[in-house]
Image 1 (cartoon, one colour):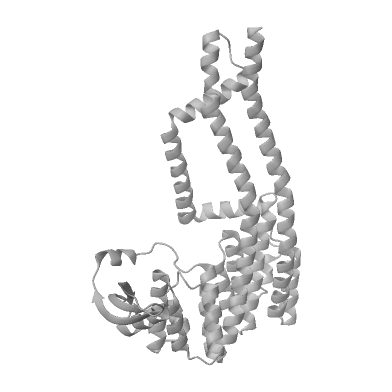
Image 2: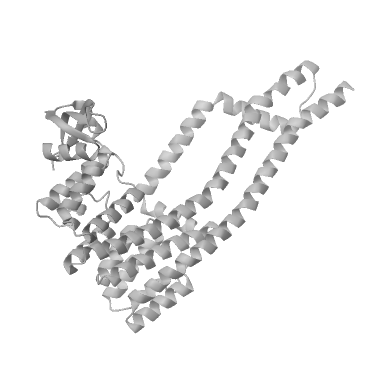
Length: 407
C-alpha cells in the first residue's frame, strides 16, 4: 500500500485556533479522520512531496514494540467483541496511532483487510512486526470463526512471555549496574589519582610499592592507548555479533555455554522450556497440527540447542515416534518436562499436559528468579568489596611508604 504525505490546515476544536502541518496516510479521507481523532477539524488537505519525509520512512529495526503489540491486540479483540467490523476496527486503531512508523504499518493492515485480505495474510506482509505464532493463531481463529477468543488467548500468551522476560532482565540489571560502577571507579583511580604519586616519588627519589606501580602502569597504558582500546572493544563486539549471525557452530557454542553456565543456566533452561511448553499448548489447544506447532515454536526460540531439539523432535514425529524422544536424557531438558510430555503423548492429551507444564513453569519462574537474585547479590558484593579493598591499598600504600621515608 502506498503511503502519501499530506499538508493540512485545520481548526483546533478546543479553542478554534487554525493550525497547519504535514502528516501521512493512504488517502485524504483517512488523514481527515486521523486529524479528527486528534482534536482537529480539517479545512484543507493537499498532497505534499518531501525527500526528508521519504528518508524518515526507512526503518532498520522492529517498529512495533512487544508492549505496543499486546496493547494493539487487546484493543482489536475488544472492538471485535463489541460488534465492530474487522475493517472498521483496523481503521480506528490506525487513526489512533501517534507514532508515524507504527501508524504506517496499521494503515497497511487496514488497507489490506479493507481490500478483502484476511487479517492473518495482512499480518504476514510484516514478518518483522508480527511473529509467526501470532499469524498462525489468527489464521486458526479466522477458520473457526472465533477470532476475538483466539486474540484473547494469544494476547495472554504474549503477556506471560513479556512478564518472564521482564523479570529476568530486572534480575540482571542491578548486578550489571554494580559491576559498571565498580569498573568506572577503578579506571578513575588508575587514570586520575595514582599518576599523581609518581611525581611525588620521583622528587624524593623513592620507589613506589609494586601494587601501586602495577595499577599506575595499567592507567598509563589506558590513557595513552584510549582510542585503540575503544576501537578494539567496538571491533570485538561487532565481530562477536557477526560471528553469531553467520556461524551455526558459534551459535551452538554460545547456546551451550549459556545452558551450562553456573547460576544463569537454570534461568536459560526455564526461559526456553517454558516457551516451548506454552507455545505448543497454545497451538494444540486451537487445533493446530503438531508438526506445524513444532515448526512455529522453533521460530519463537533464540537458543540454537533448543532449536536443534525441536528439529529432532519433528523428525521423531515424522518417523512415527514420540516427540519426547528427542528431549529424553538431554542435558538441556528437565526430567519433569520430558515425563509430562511423554505422559501427554501416550494418553493422547499432549496439549493438556503442555498447558500444565506451562502453568508449572509460570510458578517455578518466580522461585528460580528469586533464587538467582539471592545468588548474584553476595557474589557481586564480594567482587566489588574485593576490588575496592585492593584499590584502597594501592592508593594508601604510597602515602604510608612516603611518611616512613620522611621520618
